[in-house]
Image (tube, rainbow, N blue to C red; front, top):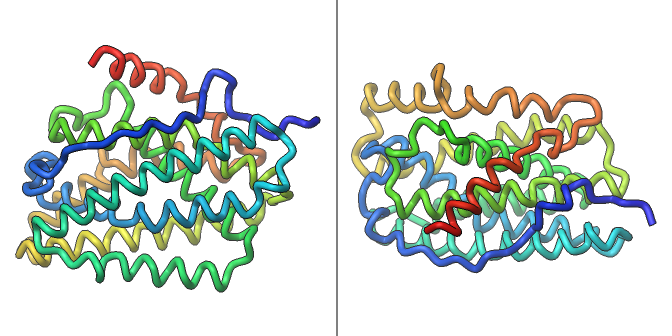
Length: 277
């Protein structure tokens, strides 16, 4: 039987049923006491519950075509991990919006509309390619956040960092599952690349739309100084997206695979920290 999984044997895709008490942090600007930084991450969280349901469905649609038992186990682990992420971010989002007066129906409605369109307009293989692309983006953001030299480690509320690092570690563990399924069922290079370009645009649009809503409700939308600081946080010399740009570009290389970036040292470090805590 031909191996279809390229996830290293020492990286189990292991669901961890974690619960996080973050209500105290969500009531305030938990990232560096900064409204924009906090709103950006909160807007990311808004996208997760519906997005992760889409990911699970797009991978499961092809599970019967997978002959590699290792990849089958990883699909089950992927669905379990994403299911727990979905639950925790549903709680996160409900608590956040209840505490701060954000409109969860509006915020999730924007995401639901896009996903509904994707389900109608895209073939199952195109939906799987979209999932693989989004999993790469989450994996490289996870790689950055778990790096030993992450610049903002001491600026984030500890309870929030615990939640985001748990999510990041599991994103890195399963970063190749959707990709390996895509390859196993005949997904090609041209679709893989074109999907990433489209997906990146709409994902950033979703994050920005959520952050704008939150800043408007907070009465801070029209602060030029805040936006300047926020853009530096995202795209400045030490900004998040500048830091992950080299890893993002790897996606477009011929024959790319997510485990070409060996992030096992970061995963081992995170597991050791968890065992020590």
